[in-house]
Image (tube, rainbow, N blue to C red; front, side, top):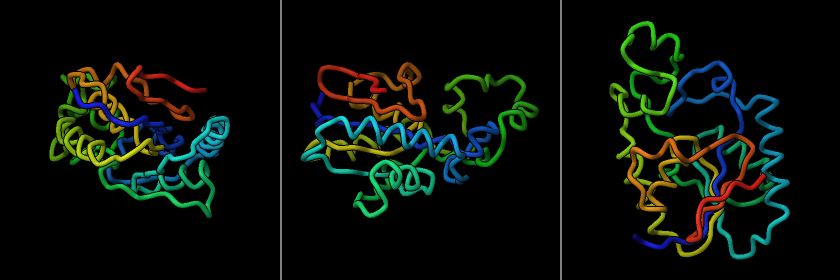
Length: 188
């Protein structure tokens, strides 16, 4: 298993579509007031840490950029990293779980296993390949702002775990996750 630098991983704040139960994928919706507060919570957590030498990376999707701007400050620099974008949802992008369940009665939409069945979308393996390439390029510790599925798959790659285990890693809004050789830690 490769040894990667320390990562502080953040999921973007809650969005309108998160609240509505819609799959976003490559689509986007605005942060809710709660989502902006969650980003503020992440900022407060990170302000307690010595981040000297950390580089900042962010998914280019607007919900992640909005979160990064709150967390790091609007005038601060961070790199937009396409590898950190959310899993492409294919035909399900923009649709609610209820809409999809109505035409896919045999599919359990409650858990994360649904991400292995995205018609016209990416697979978790596709996402894992791009985040692994990102991790291999890192030259030092990093703060990343990304998405729920992407963060979980990044954790699997980071720790050399089977991708079917990606649901064992949490990726809550308003939390900072530390990934380092000693393990996975939730900072609140």
